[in-house]
Length: 305
Length: 251
Image (cartoon, rainbow over all chains, first blue to last red; front, side, top):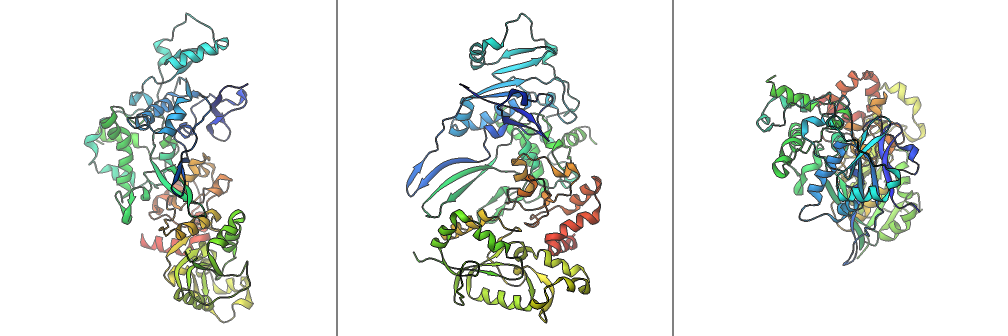
C-alpha cells in the first residue's frame, strides 16, 4: 500500500507542482513557473461550517505528503509562511498540512535570467536536500524528520563518504539586487515612473511563494441558516484590497500599492521577523505582463540614477 | 417571514442571462421556494404589474419601447439589478453608435423595431438608477444564486472588482499574452473564475473594465508585444464600446 502522497514538479505548457501518480512525470530541469504555496496556504480554505447556532470544524485528517524537488526559494517561502501562520497562535489548517509534510528539496546550480536568490540571504530550510552530482545525487538531511525518512526508505539510498562541498552549495545567479537597504528610498520620486506602468493585475502576488494575504467570505445555503466561512488568497495590487467598511480605500493610488508590495518584500517583514521576505525567485518579474523590473529600479536608485 | 416579490424581465438582448438563472438546475427549486416569483416568462405564463421587492432586468436599452419598460419597472421596484453585460455595459448593441446606420439596419430584426429606434444603445444604469449589477455575458449562474441568498439575509452585495488575472493565476494558467493572444484580462473585472482563459480562450472583457484600468500602459504593452492596435480596440469594443469610449475620452 502506498503510504505517502508525492507532490513534485510536472511540466506541460507550464511547470507546476502536482500530486503525482507516476514518477516518470517528475520534471526537475528548472524551477517551476508556479510556486508550491497552494499546498499549504490553500486557494480555498473552509474555516468552519455553521448551521443555526452550531459550528462544525472541518476535519483535518491529511495524508502524509512528500514535497519533492522544491527549490531553495520556495523552501524559504514556506519558512516565511511558517513565521506567519505558526506563531503564538498557529493556524490549524496550515499547521496540519505542514505537520504532514516532508520537504525534499533540490539544490539549484544556476539561476535563470530573472532570479536573484543570492541577494536576499536565504537560509537552509528543508527536511532533505538533493545536490545534483551528474550521475548521482548527494542527500543532506536538515531535520530529525528527514533522518527518519531516510532510514525508513534506506533501500533507495547508499551511505557515502563523499562530502557536499562549498561549490555544491553555490548557486550561480545572473541577476542581482545590489542592496536590501531600501528604507531611505521610499520617498524617491522615480518609483512613480515604474508604478505607472503597472496594470494592477495582481499576477505578482499570486506567483509569489511568500505572499499570503487573504480575504474571508461567508457562504450561505438556501435554508438561510447554514453555510460556511471560506478563506481565499487576496492581492494587494488590486484597488479593492484595502477597501474597508464605508467603502474607504486606504491605498487608493497605484504607486502606493506598488511601493507597499516592494517594501513588504524587502523592508517591513524584516523589521518584524528579521528575515527578508522576498526569496529572489523572480516569478513576479517573469510573470508580470509588463515585466516590471523592480530589482533594476532599486539598483538604479542605489547608484543614484 | 414574507417572501420577497421577485420579477425577471428582459429588454433587448439574447435572453442568455435569464437562462443562466434557470441553469441553476440543482437549486432552481430552492430559488423558487425562497422567493415569490411574480413574473418570469421562461418558467411561467402569468403577467404581473404590481410592486416588486427585487427586479432583475437583462438586456440593453435600444428602443423607445425599452425606455418605457425600464422606467416603469424602476417605478414599481425596490431593488433593481442590471443582469448581464447588455444591462451593465451596453454590450454588442452599443457598437452601432460607431457604424453607419445603413450598414446596421439590414442586420436588425425589422418587426421588432419599426419606428422606435433611438440614437444609441445604452446600459440600463444610463437610463435609470440601479442598486446592483451582475455583469457577464452570460453572467455566472453561481453568482446569481449567491446574490439572491445575500439579499435574502439582508446583506449588501459586493460585486467582484479584482482583475481576471487573479483568478486566472490561481488556476495556474499559462498567460495568453505570452502566447500572442490578445487577452484583456489585466484590465477586466473577474468573478468569472477565469473560465474563458482556463479553456484557452482570450478574455473579451465581458464583465467590464476594472475601476482603475490602466489603458495607456495596456495599449503600450500590447504595441510592444507586436499586436495591431486596431485589433486590440476591436476586441475591446465587443462588450464595452461605450465604456471604452468614455474612458479614453477621459485621458
